[in-house]
Amino acid sequence: MIVTNRIDGPGVSQTAQAGRTQGNSAPSGARADAAPTAVRGADQANFTRDGLQMQQLAEQVSAAGSIDYDKVSAVKQALANGSYRINPEAIADSLVGLEKGLSR
Image 1 (spheres, rainbow, N blue to C red):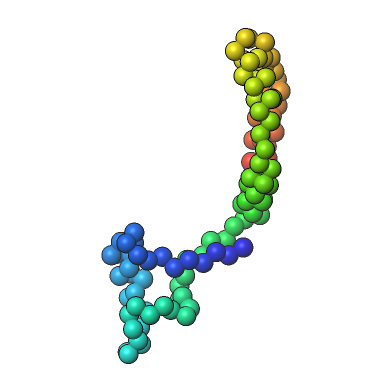
Image 2: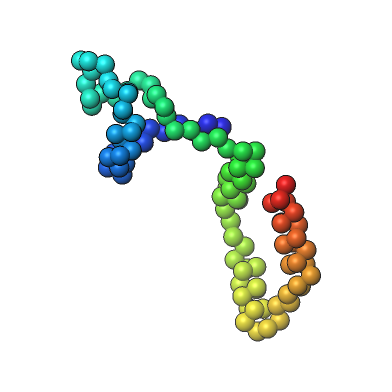
């Protein structure tokens, strides 16, 4: 996936604008405020396979939408009354698995 955007406007520094426009002047007779038909030297972002996978997962999570409020309430109550059991070995195993996945 390649994303291209033209960056200009009040948030762009004069230095950045000057650097972008040097050597790229408009042809004589061209209006300065006219919308360009093509952007030369546009910024690009190339996403890695992992980045694309993260984007897909984020879309899936946002599409899932619903929250199990009964489960949330039960966990809150268990935490409040001290009956919620924490398994440190399971947490450690999950962290190790996550770390292995990140180091690929």
